[in-house]
Image (cartoon, rainbow, N blue to C red; front, side, top):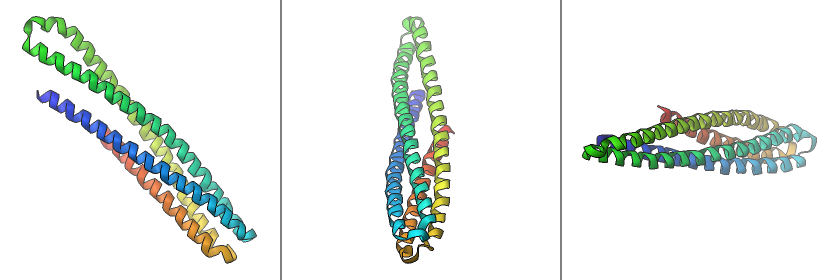
Length: 205
C-alpha cells in the first residue's frame, strides 16, 4: 500500500510539473509576441530618426528576428510538453493496472502464478514509459537552454538598441522608450525560460 501511495504521489508531481512548464512556455510565447510587435514599432519609429537611427533600426530588426525564432522554438517545446503529458497518462494507466495486479496477487495466492507474467509485462511497460519521459525531459531541457541562449543574444541587442537610441536626434526619447520596452520584454522571457529549465532540473533529481 505504501508503494502505491508513493507511485500516486510521483505521478501527481509529474503532472503538476508538466502543467507548470506548459504555462511557462505559453508565457514565453505571449512575451515573444510582444517583443516582435515592439521591435516592429521600433523599426517604424527609427525611420523618423533618419540616418541617425540606422544602428537602432538594425538592432531592432535583429531583435524581431530573435523573437520570431523564440516563438518557433516554443512551438517545438509545446509539442514536447504534449508528448510528455501523453507519456505520463500512459504510465498512469499502466501503473494502475500494475497496482491492481499486485493487490490481486497479494490476496489470491492461487492466481498469483498466472498474474506474475502479466505483472512483469506491466512493470516493463512502466519502466519503458519512465525512460521515454526522462528522454522528453532531457530534450525539453536542451531546447529550453537553446532558447535561453537566444534570450542572451536578445539582451545584448536590446542594450545595443538603448545605446543607439541616444543617437536618434529628435526621435531619441521615443526610441529610448521602445528600446527599454524591448529590453524588459526580453528579460521577462529569459526569467520565464529560466524557471522552466529550473523546473526540469528539479524533476530530474
